[in-house]
Image (cartoon, rainbow, N blue to C red):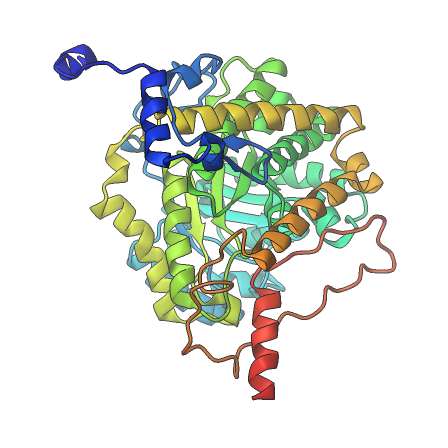
Length: 487
């Protein structure tokens, strides 16, 4: 088929393309077009089929190991990605009203973030009143409260409703350790008890969450995020296996919550590389069929968002959602574009939801199977990320695993070094954050916009140095606020 389509065009070797590029540069060196990512990957401006000579998996098919191209042969034809949206609402009844409206207007999954006031079964019942719980999967990642959340579900709802629940109510104590420097007492025993309880009461629910949010928010690059996600997943499998769970039963309950970065093609490659890497881990653990044990939820991050320009944030959310969808994730959760200013409103939440609906209903991405597959640039990036992340994961394992690497401070130091590079590049103008260090909205004022406070010190009981979340726009907004105050 390809030969028939291109037979009338003369073939061109790579050297011919390079000659054409050099002529267009008019004396500049070809190396001036090379760019270096924060992953220390060199981006070549001229992709070619020869780039894939060392890529081992780009000829694999959708639905086949190592699931680089998705876990089902039909892609989104078989199951469109779930549309989720973050509702930053505290009161249960207000949350319930907003959630019911969102589900009626195209949202297809339920998220409940840490800001929602849940203290007992009554709060849970009020939050989820009049919602078809068997219809909409849950996508809940809780660093420390997942056991309580499921306990309140058990107290609030009937047995049939609990059995029909799908998705994940995931406990993630390692994220709490990285974020705060402390982990709940007997965290892995609690994880084991939570996993057993969920399996007995809600067998279709996942119970283990692995989130990269704490690392992403602190400035981690894609290689670090991938390596840490795999290391965290393995750090949960081992103690649960020691407590009587089979590897097969555990892996089916693990859901990965990966944040979406700003580099469009790199993020597509990141999600594709993750499936390859985790499938490789599962095969090494003896699981021949890993495809039903890959659950990837993509979430927008906060480090690149502006408090002054919500419209630019909306554009960022658009590219983030598109990269996650083209990367083949199972679900996508977008924060409202104005969330960094404080509490969002119904309009901004509607925009974030409709953004995904446009990708599904108008752009019709759900009719494609691995839309990025075969693209030389994306396939090469996927291979480069996978190799680099696997190497970093192995280094974490050699150092004793994720917990030991956090306790030694090695992970914090590496992520902080990348965060410092990001800040330096923005300060020098070598990197651009639209609406922040270039192309500012001159009409935006800071009168009612909160400015980032200094990082909070770790708790006195912290057993290690926690990671600090960054927001790259913060220093620029602080200077602008200071300038406005002086004028």
